[in-house]
Amino acid sequence: MCTFGCRTCKSQPDCNGCSPTRCSPCISYCIFDLESAVFDTRHVYRKALKELVRCYDKRIPDILHVQSGPMTISEMSELFCRKLDIPMSWESFRYELNERTSHLIANPPFMDGIERLVPHLRNSCMELALITSSNEANYCSKIRGREDFFENFSTVVCADDPELHAPKPEPDVYLIAMSRLGDAGPDCTLVFDGTPKGVQAASDARLPVIMLAEKDLPCCWSELAALRFEYLDDFEPEMYNLPPFTDPAPKRRSSRRRTRYSQRLTVIRARAAEAAAAEEEEAEEEPAEPPAPAALPSILNFRE
Image (cartoon, rainbow, N blue to C red; front, side):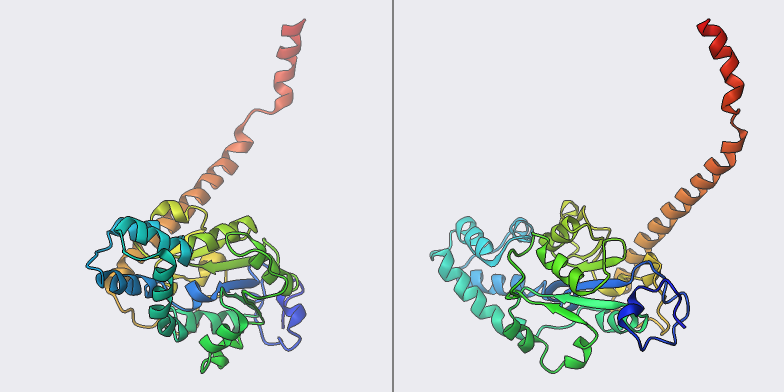
């Protein structure tokens, strides 16, 4: 049965088979960004941009890809037209870019690891929310044929939501999602987002955020993130005291990527162990300190 302090089970009356560990009142809610944490659309615009500028015999320097990372489509179009001297207006460039990406974004692939993580969290008595930069009609188009998976999310906040007045990097979308999750709050909610603006929005909402960023994204754009991974299957629930996966881990596509992750996780665990050891040493040293009253007589005599 669920423990007395299980916050998520207030909205899940049918939750009656959990172990106490699964209903711990730590992280009880998660919010996922559709375009950067559920779907992997990070490479769509990069591929479309390369194809588009190649029509004008141009090549995109890596620095421009980095600079355009946190930009909107309009800002990105203006930047590339100006820096690469494209012989067209940035509005026309944006239109052609959207035409090239529309069919790719309409049926995007899942992020590696999401199909394993989301059902696991849901089966662990956690409430899940979804946010998207798409309006409701486009959202329904994107998830067509995958409705069963998206039933794991109890609430969805779309771009045309009547309560949403400002997009990212304003925190409104995360605050709305939290309010619709019932008892969700900064102390028990975890965010998964892959954009600098999304990380900024979650941080301004005082929520811890896991950033899913491309490996060449500058570290300065992920400073506000609690953790940063290139792929979602690098995330392990135990990092946030969540129930571990019960099924065996799927085979990784790249052992090289696993090596990088293992190194990061080793560093995280080493730092945690060092911090715990330091706390124990401080706790052992505290009783050895001389009691304060013993020093009072000498201080009083000095004042006299």
